[in-house]
Image (tube, rainbow, N blue to C red; front, side, top):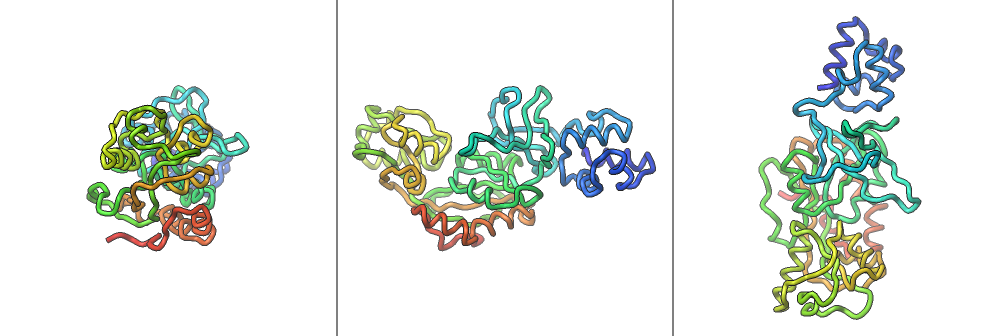
Length: 340
């Protein structure tokens, strides 16, 4: 690992961590964290360490084997040059994902930008954090209430339940948020622990008259729906089947529940497959098909990760839980309880 290479070169030079810190312009705490594999150095720190140790940056920090950098979600295309990314480390692997969208001001706080060599960390970015993928709309709210730096930082990647589980199985996230009808969740893989987060209904959001499922299924109205691995998309097709409707849905595939609701509110489509809370946040009417259990599935190797306790504490905090209740559509009676 890169940290081991830094430590070996430091010792070969006869330096203490403090002496290397002084020579490189990096704090002693950062040197210790880098050597322990708990922190990814910024570009400035990497250059300073390499100069002090008399070697090229690539000799210290170029990824190899298990350290290779990879996208959180399989099949993610290489971003455009300079595109902003979130970056963190899961085990010995550096993982990255494009920032989903800017905040209300139009600016994003990125960890890195994309270069021909892969992610390049920006000054001040540590690459620490707990990586969780899922389509729970409030994950972003939880991340905003968590620490902005350190191992307790929450790195959220929005994805369907199916894609999130694939990332968990591939070791590219610490945890995944999964939802589905009670008794209808996917099989639990070996080595995974589970905690309940909430229960909420999935269904159809709309801004005018409620679309008839027969018209939706026949393709006569545009609907924002989800990718085939999304639990809400599967609920959509079950609703069509129960109504005896055709299954010839037309319309764009939304990246998440909030995106589906926003497209509907903007008039881009007649309706959107989403959750009750997302519909409410967009000022839309909503018809429910199913109530889904929402769970956090965690690789047991990372149950003691500081970010794991941060996520549950933030999720169950009065600040976040009161916001969720205000939005409506959230049942939180079992939130934070481990599922045995």
